[in-house]
Image (cartoon, rainbow over all chains, first blue to last red; front, side):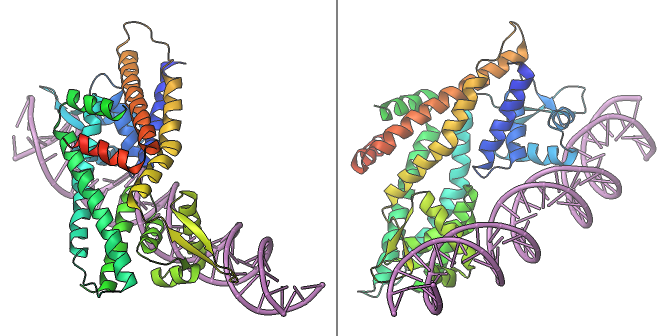
Length: 168
Length: 168
DNA sequence: TTGAACTTTCAAAACTTTTTGAAAATTAAT
DNA sequence: ATTAATTTTCAAAAAGTTTTGAAAGTTCAA
């Protein structure tokens, strides 16, 4: 397979994966493009390679920066901004875990805390089922939260080791 | 807090979480409703409680069945079908992991396999960066695949134990 | 300052996904 | 076989999301 064809396919695949994980297709494609670029790219280059508009490129690059997956690179004497992605895929994974934990898991846990305090008239089947479900999710969520915390803080080798253990 | 208010909030929260994970809001809400119902519900009851149309209820219930999260329940002498969700949240989690692995991870790995075979002219920076990225993702993906496989097959206690270890 | 080189914004357009509801299909009892 | 209860389908409508591109804003070198 030729490199250009392979690049194209990789960008498509990453975009598809992104959209089934609640990330916009284009954002994932910009990420893919930066992941396989040895050098930082300018807005122009991103627009051109993905055939997207300036506004769109700008929006998605900023979202990636916001997720901590991409950084601006300024070159002395150049007005233009260049963008470069974190290439270490384990770091990328950890960073995504960190952000999702903050954005989704923690708010969910706060919401559940409140719901645990619902008044339960004894003998009410509905209230019992409700409490049990909320409690179960809360417990699982709390465990996931602690696990992620440990994982995010750990350095790569620790994490690799833990995964190895998990795999028996 | 009153039970009805709490139910409402739970359904909303589950719907929101679902949509940031690529699951449609309504599908997650139907799931939430069934999770907190001690008894199986009919299509009518789902429509009514969530204020959605018959077609919509049918579509989403079937999607949940397809994901292995909900089952039909037939009552002798009743024409109507009733639906009941798996309540054990650990089982739910494992089932979702299983399905996503099949639907997303495996296809991604197949795609990457093909991309690993790209011809690399030596000394080509671009080709090098491409291969390194694909290789890195492929390795991580393979590890995740094995880990999920172990986890899915394991029984609840094994998994709890492993998570505990992970948490130090 | 000025103005050229760029980045950011945002309202409107395009596209995608979800929802509706009525018609068609299915089912089971009579 | 007929009917009435129920589920399923699907085309059209509504809602939601993403993209565009031109205008506004910013920055910096001269």
